Image 1 (cartoon, helix red, strand yellow):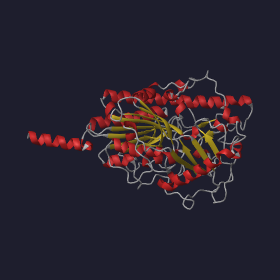
Image 2 (tube, rainbow, N blue to C red):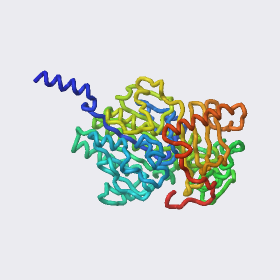
Image 3 (cartoon, one colour):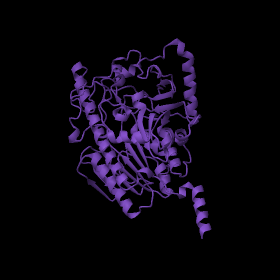
Image 4 (cartoon, one colour):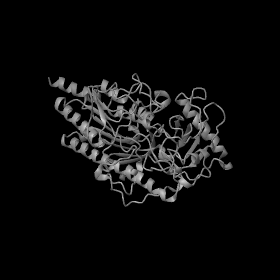
Length: 493
């Protein structure tokens, strides 16, 4: 008998997945800028619960989305693939039911899986999705107050209250039920916040939290002379600083200096929604501590894409400029590292799925454009990327951003704007030295001393795209019809 026990123990040691499996709590925010969190340097937004996670785990200093748009980015997080491969290239396309995802693979490996909150792949579909035992979402963007929820396909009902509080309540209810019914079963819970996506509406207790903070337009909003002409054309549109600012400005366009007050109010509203997210993180952490599950839970806090807040005269995202690309990522799990770390290497949305599957000792994705960062954190990885590519396709529903193809290295960024029909680009390209100009204030594309570098970056961009199956023949994109002034349909804002 003793021999059998020793044999089984040895077998378990050789098969880590037979040991206690870690839980996964994935908290995803929408349009969250890293610099709106205390641990990423915010001077005004206090986020003690999120900061505590960063102080106990890994704060990724340079995390980026491969397409700065909600649905494509979320699909890349789930699948480990670029948008052209998973097929979700806009905010209206459903995540393919046959496409593997990391929650689905965890489910197949014995995890209880759930999704709560904003899913936002398939604009008008709030039905349960494959790979999840329990699925609670809503159609479209949802509302900050009194959203109508689809409770796992069994009922639709309006739950009164503030979105961030309600979705946290729903998630905690499920966790309590799991703890009661199957306490030994590992779980993966995906919590999708609406916040801080527009239209920015803080919880009443935070409505006036930043009234005394002055917020000017960024300096780069007025440094456009060496930039592509489409950026000036965008200034007075839905995605420009002189436009409606997600309805914070009632009369527009308005380029008067005093109209900056509308911009300031918009930013205050944005910041206010984040304070409630921090409260939510604190509530869930407290439950994990009370149930002795904190240290056996991989706790991920992340944003889906970046956000422009006036930089280069723009609001929203979609472009390849730094505020549009950068996202916060914090991972707390003692099984990954027991000491707090700040990771400087470039990490992408497509890295999340392979990394989490490795941490859970689960089967790998059949295909991934990303790479697990587990080795990078624990032992270093000399083969880690020093460059990657970004792409975005022009949207007729939001005609304010051209087609974008870009490469970002550890130092340089090169951006081009294909017309979409194979003809020469109709917009000026951009080149930035991120080491000496992190704010992208000086476009170096016309400097003759950089001609060889531009050639090298263009070749690098082509190689990176080819590695994911994109060639001039296969890289299909819509025709760039130019920046337009009309507002988008109210149903899809």
